[in-house]
Image 1 (cartoon, rainbow, N blue to C red):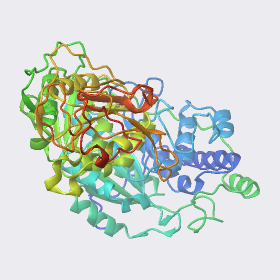
Image 2: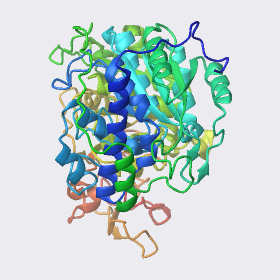
Image 3: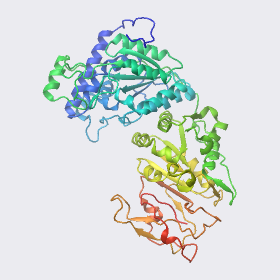
Length: 595
């Protein structure tokens, strides 16, 4: 036993060992059966973790399967989502998935038992399968439990050893330690083999343990096939109050099928029918073991949502110069009267103005530091728990660095609100590394997304309020500089619309060059006429659109955008700009309103 193990006594022999072993065997058999029937899947990655999950299911998970919405249910997240045969076999063992569904619909088109778990199943919190994401999301779930709900539920995460090469895993462990999330346990299936050979550290669990300790969590090293050791480690993890636990379970990939145990080349491959038949027979054949998990303690979250509370948005006078990022800070602070609203920022709250919220609701403000992947993941986890989460940072980093987390949040269909500031070429002196130029196109490509681009403070404030109740992923793009207010307090900004100022006969729609992507729209908006002025603005930087608002749900067609209009808008001036011929055109995947 490694010296990293913190137990002070030998693991106790657990009761009902035989029944737990029978459950583990059934999980293995069913993992083989469903993947072989489907002709694809990851049975070997499921076989290695079957003992771990059998003990968790039978002795430590507290969950009411008939009422997955109960606030004090434990959470179980398969960060190694490819081990879905194991997860679905667990669902069969607790009685919420039938044998026929498991064997005949797994990985079939239109079925809910997909190759990697999604929230189509009510017991799945988030879609996983993009490695390195389950644990970061679990940090957000656990943040809610400890710091907001103040409930004793526990979050369990099954991780693979290959995904420990992802930096996002270590961002998660670091932030879990920082926020003292003793209600979070990662169970790492250290089975040595990845998709294409050995993992980086293979079975060097002591090296893993040193890394875990360095990031502030408590490592427990165990034999992942010893039921007593598993039980003891899970018990210790649940009893911890302030320190997250990482159980490093040394396992054998393909355990239970000697022919493929610890053999490279079997990752992601279903056993052929003849091999599966032999393996199932040697394991004792199909069985019908049923397990009843422990019930969660009764409990009510400390925070009760109230979306009907009266909100007094800030107001400004026409002509006042206000940065839209400052308007975001003022608006989200006004929304603090809603007790379910939380804000996260990536150590730039004094610039994004998310820090304004901290001044009025410090207990619902979470600093995630320069860790944008964890920033989005934590917001996703908080959303899973029913909170209205806003996450903000500089747009260049909020969208690009954690983009896969945003993409997977779309797959999960969670409600997520992102605010990217300092966008565009406006911040020229900072250089191109700081300019968010791809953000609108990137966010429009995300499932369930709504992209918002307000032009002044009142439109920003109203859209921030709208975002709070907009399903899916909404992204608001804000700028650094202060620009004149052009709208009064009664102006309305419905999603999917835009407003045009200073239109004239010089505004044109031109065909896209043939060299553009074949996915490009055939029409594009010309860059704003720099020689004319907007209706209520006296001066505008040459690289900034003087449009008022572009608020377009990405899932909707572009029929309402200027670049799709069939009529030519009118310009504010009869004289064309001398710079019009030099003005660049926007990529057709981005649309803005011309002045």
